[in-house]
Image (cartoon, rainbow, N blue to C red; front, side):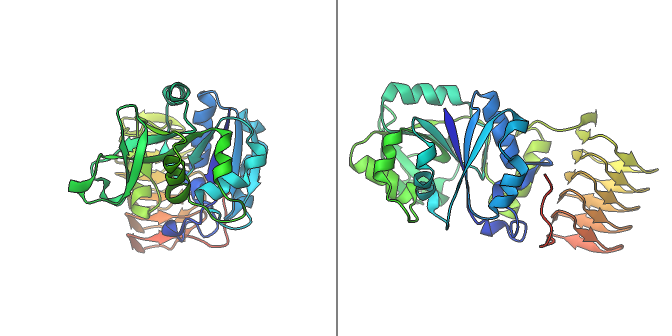
Length: 347
């Protein structure tokens, strides 16, 4: 079975971090989220992937290539313009000739596939939508279902008292190839607003099943940070690179800590990181590979991508630094998002 990973969005709400980077390539715990997803799906038995890409597609292709390094096969369906969820599926039609999976690749979720696939086989419909349950469904499209799990309708952003359930689209679908007949070609098409409502209206069989486990849309800076804090707190059981050197502190290879450095859990430090004397790292700090942290730096509730530099005496709180960002000495960065527009990630 193939998995189609939808990675073509512009990531506008995460700018400037996504000015030159597809949103699914933003690092989570020092690895691109798309890499976490592909690795997880490989462990679930999926070894063939199609990546639908548009914005900065060359970054994805340079990083993953044909997938051989990860023990999978990767093909690409490049969108000539932003085509929407269903438009991107239609654009990849030539590579999808049997039942396939679709993932919104900017949703942070590591699903268990076997229960979903078994449910899909049993109901015999054209589509299964993985659902997640949220406390407040008023910001989402909520599903109404019958006792068999068949989806009767979507209600967009209902008031809490009017919501028929707290179940929303989790951004994972199992589709039969016949679904392509319902998607027009060569234009932008929304699967949520056009395709699924049409399939429901024509009684093609659209079903939903709750996919358990951690789920979060990482599409805003606040949500992106929260994914990291949940990973550090182990509410999101993402695999961490490096080793745990003390409770709640993970470090990679080649880390050099100066005298008097204080690591306040939870903290994740990547490979080949140098931290100067009397620096305080944490709580809630993620430092990427090949970073340099100067003496007397305070860094908390912040995320530094690879190859960033923080000069002596600077203070960072609630901030995100993109690749190769340099913070001058003695500066304070609070609620800051800084990205060097000419820099992109390295394969």
